Image 1: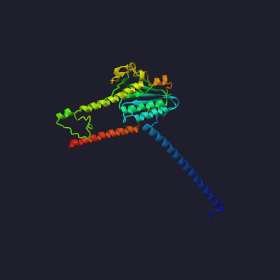
Image 2: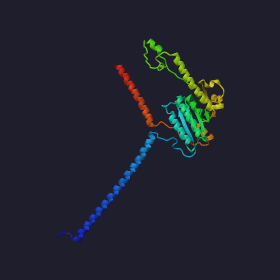
Image 3: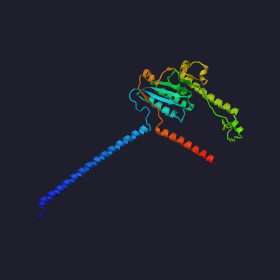
Image 4: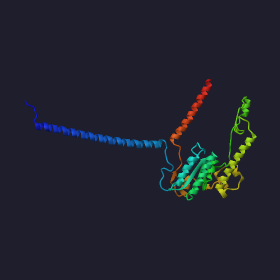
Length: 321
């Protein structure tokens, strides 16, 4: 039996194979395109998720971000005022600048809850507030005291248009203090002598392991008095005629909000919300305060734990000897 195909049949089979191959290649090309599209889409989605996680975990934010439209700008000073704390002059001044320069902010509120701290940092913040108020005279600036506004905190507060408190807030402490310890008596009992070699007669001033030098004590007192006078001058400039003529004001005492109002240290009672709602007529609050992010908190925690571990290792090493 002859199975040889005719030329027409062979041509037909060849055409069918070619068509099938072309169709297969076309479908394969479509699948590859779909796969590339999905891969690109997944990469974009992954990027968005990663960026979102970074913002959430590391608490990244710009001063005043998240606010739109007319609002009250808020800047907070919390805790000790020092170059190594959250309440440092660089960050506070940056936040204040952003708040004053915002075209949507109808006014600025500085919330203070601080026992004070560095007079240098407080002075830098006070100076910057005065500069910003001169540049933006149309923008009201209020200070709202929560639990405490003492010493360096009050040094900053007097730069405001008005200071508002709660009746139980603690205000004042217009003074300067320097403290330390002396171990000379204990050293004598234990038979320990201090060997301190300096170049400069006052280089070892206030050394806790040396006896007090009356001359150096007077030098320190004079320095503290000068700083105290600077503090008094700033308070008088800020409060003006509102300040009552009471000799106890500058003794370093602390008063509650009600007493502070009677002395002219503050102007009245109020909260952040009442200032924004009733005075500035812009109840929408936008926080311009620079916050410590997650990475900074981890770094500090890691540094503290590392220091503790090194200290323990040294103590163990000493015990082994």
